[in-house]
Length: 220
Image 1: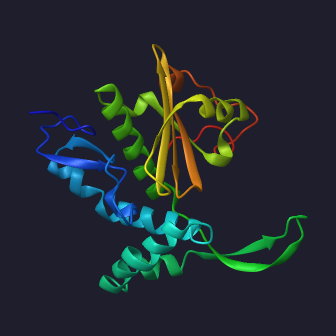
Image 2: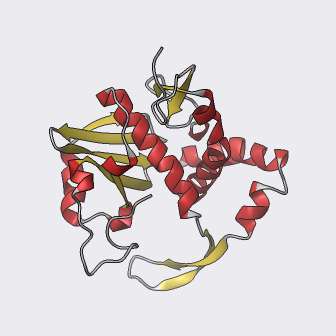
């Protein structure tokens, strides 16, 4: 019997990568990896939060994000009206809307995301991709993750030449590996994206001295 891709315990279930709840229609090429029951069930609330935030942030530009929001997300609000919905309401912040000339033309409600909860799911998804492609678990020490705005320009350019797996508008990822490590790029609703280094590339990466936790490498 295989071992869990997250903790290494005996796996008696299978986990979907990325979570099925992100899709309005689950694609045939969604990844499944072996997981123990504890790991497969313990992330459910954080996955729901992740789905809600990425769908909200992509709502204006993605038809699929709107369908997921109007369908699954709204159903979760009705099931727990005082839970997730109330928490998100307290996270609303004003966001300036700019035209093509950079001029502020108004304001709209934005969402202040809990980075720690989002980071848990991003890390879980990247570990799932790594396991599916490399056949082994990825330790926390062998992984460093960058949010889109924090990715050094030279790294962003390297992602364009990587092999891509496309699961429609909801999710796609690119990956490339070598003897010393690799890189995995993931994107949701053709909007939010993250890039990670694995192996020696992650362990040996040095955050530039002039960059803080919000501008260089971000450990999630």
